[in-house]
Length: 197
Image 1 (cartoon, rainbow, N blue to C red):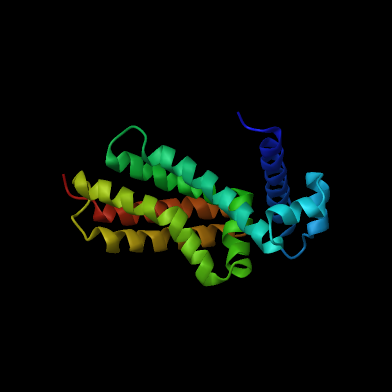
Image 2 (cartoon, rainbow, N blue to C red):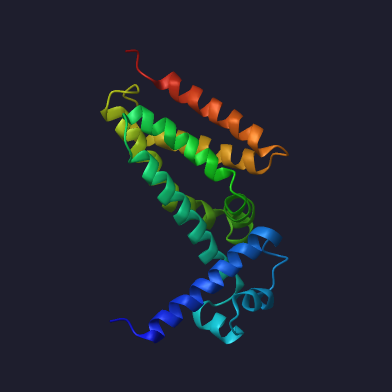
């Protein structure tokens, strides 16, 4: 049996992260104060400092939540039904859809490189996303869907293309139009690697 204290502690932490996520998405990191976050979460500042060392630690928890949700969604798609090729194409579309999410755009793409520092941000992106890209490339090679290119190099190149696509979508005045262009372009690149049947 879990104690009420454990449940309360977890619900307090969740309330803080949810509050931070919403406020960082709407206002950005710099324009969001800890006072606003605790007020919205209906907890004390002491409760915040019980869970987090400060604003950056809270931001990183919000970042982890956004990334975890995105990766769960993408993993569900690429591990789903269909051929390796169909799953990969569905994965590209799902990733582009994730890039249209305001929380993903603001927290993961715009704010994280500044708040966390570029190197730490890239490490976090690699931790969350790269393994999925590599597994997808490996599945395509194993299924004979694409040319037998080196998996690691191919995954790195595609990972870079997907990251650049995400930044292009997030920085666009017309994200939906840009998302369609990114999908078309990455699909064309993938099709160029496809083996003739």
